Image 1: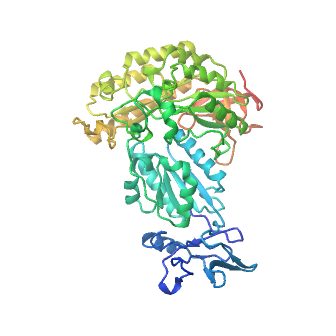
Image 2: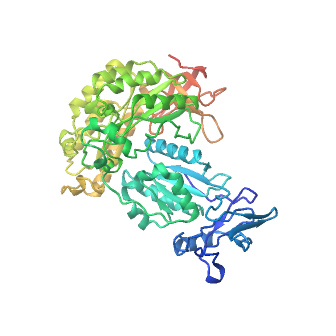
Image 3: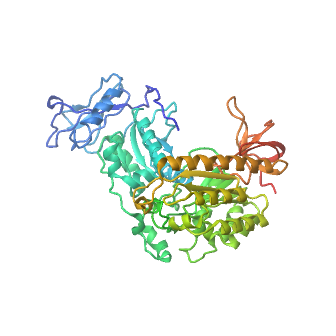
Length: 579
């Protein structure tokens, strides 16, 4: 999301605060209390006043002072004054003199926060939980580049791979350029903590997952100019018991983002899309040598089914027609609840929630994808026959070095099992090329697998070292130029193969959920059951007449462009599920 500075609107409900260190002549002693820090505000605003504060303790000196002073061009003509008779801070205005009880300063005239979410759909859930906490405590949610300028921009960062971390840093810098306070949360903030804060002074605070339950208080601190100590990262796998069955009880004492549900609704939708992610679980128990996610997301812990169903019903009440089930490893759902078939039992219940027309499961580990789960996804009405399989490679030797299971043969067998039950199922995956020790023979085997697998979508990533991973210490690294060449080669093959797979769908009938109407810049489009949100292709309507967001449309595929399909509508139903 691009962030740009929004013009500051002056008016009775707008607060623009400039904090700067004051000379001794402008700091007065009031009674026996420590000298206060005066804060200048617009005439329409309310003074922030801290009787025990010093310029240093509220972050009014150094870089922050210079940055905020430079960014403000507003005239300042009202100052905190002292009512000698009442020994308390006062504010003068056209309505008279207002006295504030000592030690209980009024809140800012506005508490506006903008959420910017980077990375995966799991982060989207976390952002909506944070938004729910803030809005329930009186913060107003605004767009980062909308007409109402935010006081704070909260960036939910991604810390997965190097490119994602760069995007996170760039977004934090762009947010800082608006003049708003900037708060970093999310995976990168959790993973690096104080190190990120030290290297990125443009962020006014770097908050870890353990800050989330008290995020309102922390943002109040930021808005008041109080300095917050950034957390020291720790391996979150150590916060829960090694035994999965002991984790549900222990997880009540650990902050797990996206798991805060009930008795109060702690989620606030940040868009009006008919599709919404819904968390099944968090964390991962696998020890893939290239992946750092378990160290900052923690050990695997499932959510209880009643909690998930309640949130699904709430989402349906708020206009959601497709539930996108997310986690780090959905096939592990229920192992800590004592039921390895828990996901097979849960998805039919989710599909039966009133208002829900489609349930989609994401991130399946091939080695854990059991026949019963395949059948549940392939044959349950209302569940999309969609299989997001994390292959990563197909060469058995490379997979073993990644500490993963499978082979070209076993993966092709799994795909055959799926297509026997659901011939039109969508299959997608990601692969890593250039992993340490990968040979040309390994790459050729991967290319052969992809050719025979006929997947709908494949993401191709070049290997890069990640801090704290086992693979980062491997000796037989592939030269960066060779990695880039292999990425280009496999990507070119994938582009050709997935375009061919899309062409094979011409003539099929599909049910499309409309997610975008036609504008001057964009076509009317949505997704069929075999297409996942954002990362997969979409269905573009040849005739969008009368279609609106949220409609379920029966359509026929009449053409393709890359992985995208061109469809003509046959019938639409805005009220309920179609077969």
